[in-house]
Image (cartoon, rainbow, N blue to C red):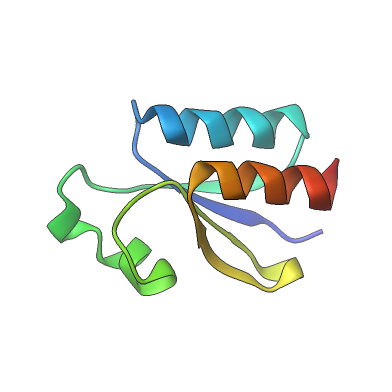
Amino acid sequence: MGTITFYELPGCPYCAKVRSKLEELDLEFETVEVPAAHAQRTEVEEVSGQTGVPVIVDEDHGVEGMAESAHIVAYLEETYA
């Protein structure tokens, strides 16, 4: 199984929701902490087209920059639960 890349900002409640689901499902994931300033979030913008977090990339399933915590949690449950 490949690694999921998870873009997050420490202290973000939406990111915490996604992190909890990743850990609950015992998934391997790499964390990329984004800068607090949106203008400096170039990496996550390249991946997802926007500067908000959380965002995941799941190469094994062709997911390239999924945003919105509710969508991510639903995707993780459908794909990995």
